[in-house]
Structure formats: structure tokens, C-alpha cells
Length: 245
Image (cartoon, rainbow, N blue to C red):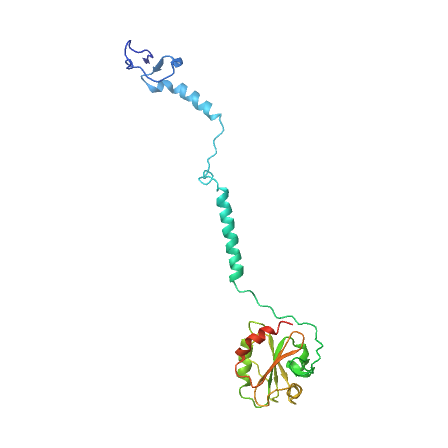
């Protein structure tokens, strides 16, 4: 074995031959064996000592990442809240059918603008009788017999009431079988047979040749009577006002 002395040459700052510089002086003389296999016992002793220590847990790369700062978390929460509020405003809201109010008691006569719709009982789909006052708010479309434009106006009126979800009551004087377009109004189109023309006789200003729209408020009062209706989409502002008592 070769001994590595810790002494230095007198009067020189350079390390002496075989000297290992920078080691603590209390370590004394370090002996380096010629054959490293001579250190097998020391290596075994050190390995046995290290095996007694608990193994270190390996942290994932995510656990070594620093946490988010408080301002950054606040900014993220603010953005999420802002996006949620924007979606509530922008996305279309599902429309609900307007609510029926209690029947009014106006001083105006029945069957004119400002008065109540007549309490006529007409035959509906399946033979069930229904009173005109049951439908409020609603739009009555009175179609006289032989009217050639009433069916087209009826379809347009149903489309014009999609936004307000108003019920369209088609009162026809024709004695022929009433045929409705399947799925046209998703249950909002109701047909009533009036072969005797009782609705036309009870409501003022109803045309005897063309379609007449009778706009009924939530409390049963008549807002407007539009005879010989050609373009139902022109009634949209008044249709929206029917839900206001």
C-alpha cells in the first residue's frame, strides 16, 4: 500500500509528492491500497449500513412543480365566471307557453275589441267541445267556407307565433273533414269546427270571404280583430303584447 502523507514541503505552497490537498487535517494519513479488492470488507460494511436507512420516495415531475400563485388562481376563477355568465346571456333560453290569467270583467261589450271573446262552445278534434274562452292568450283564425287562402295564412300564423308560443285556434266553417299538417305546431294548433258560422256572427268585423285573426289577451279580452289577413308576420309586435295583461 502507498501512504498519502498530509505534510507539505517546507517553504513551498505546492503539495508534496503523494499529498492529497484540501482534506481535513483530522483525517490523518490516508492509505491507498495497490489492489482495490483489499477494500471489499469496508465496502460491505458501508453497504450494510446504508441498507438500514428507509428508501427515499421518488417524487413525480408534477410534485416537483411549484404551486399556482394566488393571483393566478383568482384570475382563472374570474375567467371561468365570466365565460359562464356570457354563455347564460348568449345562449337561447327555452321559451315557455304564456300563462293564462283570470277572466277579466270589462265594461265593453262581448265580441268587440276591448271586450271578452264570446263563450262559444265548438266541436274540436275527437268530438270534444271547447269554449273559445278556454284559449287565452291565443289567436283565433276564423276561416269562412270556400276560403282559398286560409290554409296558407294558418301555416304562416303558426310560424309567426313560434317565439311567443301562443296557441293558434283555427275555427273553420267548412263542412269538409279538417286536415292538419302533422307536427306543424307541435301541439299549439287546435282546430274547431263551426259550420253554422257562430263565431263570425258573434265577433264584430269578421270577414265573410277571407281569414280573420282575433287576438286574445291573457285575461280573455280581445286586443285586435284583423279581417282579411294577408301577412301574419305583420302582427308580431301585437302578438308579443298578448302575454301582457
